[in-house]
Length: 483
Image (tube, rainbow, N blue to C red; front, side, top):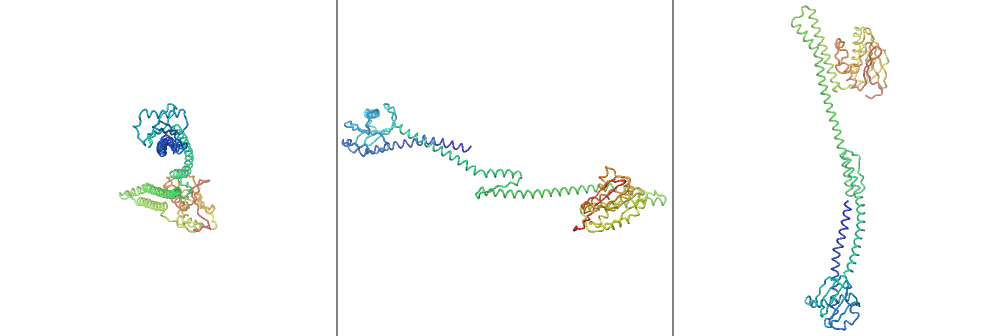
């Protein structure tokens, strides 16, 4: 759009220049040429000798750059001398003009060696002229005439030529400007598109640099800026993710603490109430005999023992979940490990009339924290003893699982309800609250199992199987593992 406006401006300026400036220059040149011719006549016509006028080459010696018509009048005898042999309309008009000068007594207008230049319209020839009318130094009168039509035709030709040249230059200049602007603007447009993509956080875009000038330096600067912005934003994102992770972890810890306090207060409420009630009964002498006092005392001791066990388990669970317990991974033999735990819990199974079956296998070595895995297996075994049906079977078995060994604890008995089986590993969750309270369970044991196995990064779970329930957990048995 700017190029078109500039082109129109150039054409208009050219027309004005030709119409006014060149016209003035031509008019000034014509007048100077007439003056030059007048001065040349002054030099040639030094006296009034008629012999000078008889010389046919006289007018050829006059400097006449404008090729003006020259007419000289001898004022004494009225003899007319002219540069053209034309008795037609032009000569008639010139004689009429000279006679007009005499009749008007224009001698008062200019003296010897003076002249005037004016534009006249000749009614005889019906044409316009520039006329120089004056008096030579020798007293002769002179009339120099040049037709304006000739000047105007030259001006018209020059004007057209100048306009054509301007149009040609304009076309060439416009084409050159468009080509140059496209060459110059192309990298600017690429940079603009790249900057827009950068503003949308797309830093994969790179500006191709093909020159070492200011545009190339700007492209290099934008590429460096893109890389630094990408690096800075990546660092900010990483820091933001880390901050969000820290905030989420802190919220999780706060939620766990609140949950821990809520569950502890709830679980301790019942044993504390029992201890308080039986202690007040002893104080108020509600027991009249030794047997009653012993019963009250046993209840207080039993509830205190349950509270102590629950607090210890809660502390253990809390340490594992908060990551305060560091795993001591070591290699140990699993068959002997199971046998040692079975020996210590055999009496509990015998009290239920249950039979524990553990098929002796070749030695199996695993990698784990032996102390924590003992807690896991003991919880499974204790849970099986409490829930096995009377005179039922508890079976311990191993199952290869790739590089792992799955330890399975099965007990005959009732299935776990479908709505409960997915929640048995939740803290303080009790599928059968009556039976759990009966044997002193508090819903923490299986939560310790879950936390321990998650710390090891191994699978664990429970399934309802034929005529019973199966709990399991996996241990790393890869003999090539570098622990």
